[in-house]
Image 1: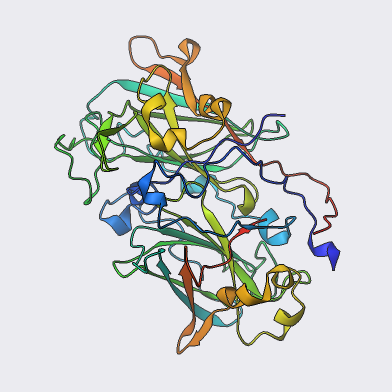
Image 2 (image 1 turned 90 degrees about the vertical axis):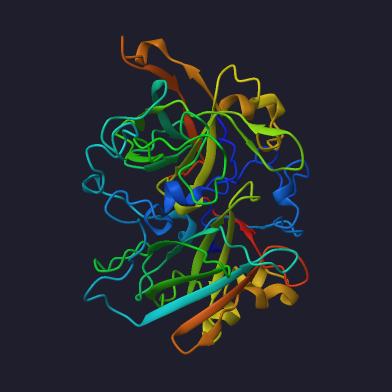
Length: 182
Length: 239
């Protein structure tokens, strides 16, 4: 068996390849993953914002964030033709990111959640985490959340905002986000 | 409840990827989680992923010598080609591969790159393609230059091309870098050497492929990529 190819950091210039238009490089007629929700998509629209900080509390301004999630009915991959389920964005100068998406339905015995994937300079193997919602009763029985030490579970629960939810991601330190190898 | 953990994705190999905290690569110091990631068998969330259609890819997207400006790119003309497979040896078809790189002088077209080498008006530095039914891919580009980078000392990156790869499952997502056979900087680079397995580094090193060379035009380099295994039948994990 040939094992997986080794990962390497995406480096500080990842925008050129993965979000060129956002970085001022007009390519390919637009950036992939910039629009997740099309006209006529079913479900509740939701803005998921977030911010990424390093072990010193400094904003991580150069990260790429991708999201993968179920559609509003809980199908993954999405069956709703007006919804891609996949998004990609980059952090701004304050380390913030933003996805305009749909609130996912409960999937296959799991509480509603989205998967986030984070690549940046100084990250050798991209970090994978999940975002859950504070008002979902399914959280109490979610099989993944229940395997996270209770003291760290809060790092995976977004906070409600006027337009949706916000998640704070801390790469290192006291409030370090839970990352997964799933 | 255990049915959620179908485990179709093979467990990620240990001792293969760079550790989060690779001290010789200074940027990892404050960006490395101190807790190990929580390991669980895969669920439907990781075993599925976005699908990209062939209509996405324009005719010159995979040709970095022509996809940015008129007149072509300066530098050694090369073909980079290979196969994308999973750990079971199965081809991964219709997978999106995106690449980015410095120009022939070692300069990126990026606002944060202040290296003295000039920009090439004919070179943007990114390309993309989908693998074919056999998992094969090919790009045309120029050989990137080596360049110095701030890491506390006199550090130079070996010539490299960044690769971003999707598989059939989001849990197979991989970002890596391709190096060129014979480059003396491979052995000196803290980023390359953060990979703990010498054989894994060797597999990130592309080989000259004379059979794929276009005579009197461009030399070819072969770079095969392997993603985590994805089994068709569920394995009932017991987390």
